[in-house]
Length: 311
Image (cartoon, rainbow, N blue to C red; front, top):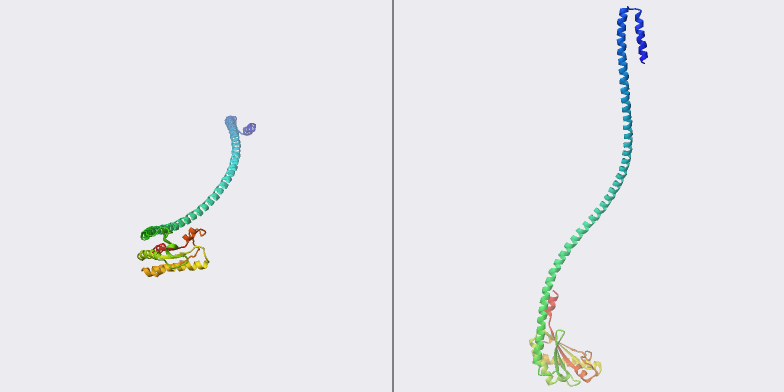
């Protein structure tokens, strides 16, 4: 390229030489030389700048290439990282959804438990009211129970007192003739046959009559006592005969009580038990003797007690 410029310059210089003087030629030649020198300088500077620019460009291109390679490497890493992140995100999302389902199930269970707790609270309130009602009822029953116990104790005391009074009134009669004892809250006055009757008879002897009248005088004052008279026989003789005899003997006692005392008839009940309620063995003479008896059973009236129990 430098040679090309030199050639052009020569043509320019030679061509006008045919037209100008030597002085002008020299002046022009000097100018041309300066122009050539200037052009050489410009050309050299241009080449120098070109080489520097090319070197810089090569360096820049190498840097860009290195940068591109680095970016490619980073892009690959970022791609892998993105893939890993996407996988982690997918796993995290799946875990999140799983926990959401668990949370929802837990919430449902908690709601059910909350409903159950509310239901239990309502039931507890109802039971609490029932307990309060039962407690009040129990307190009332305990009060009635105390009253019942007091009445029962009072009744026992009255029965024991009645037994003592009867024992004192009939102490002139020995144990082989009559016996006074307590059984099931009742006073039993058991009179044997030899005190009251002859064998096979329903007529009461004088001594037996005295015993019955003494007992009747006591029972006149104890109006809260019902009187049950039972006749008993041994097993000798036909059953119907023993039924009849035991009943007639009980009625004979009733007659003496109602005729010689102020005992009201409605207080008295008579029955014949025949041989069907023995107190001893009917296969011995002593046993048969004990079975031939009249039992006067004194039963306390418990109307007030029953009324209190049914309240």
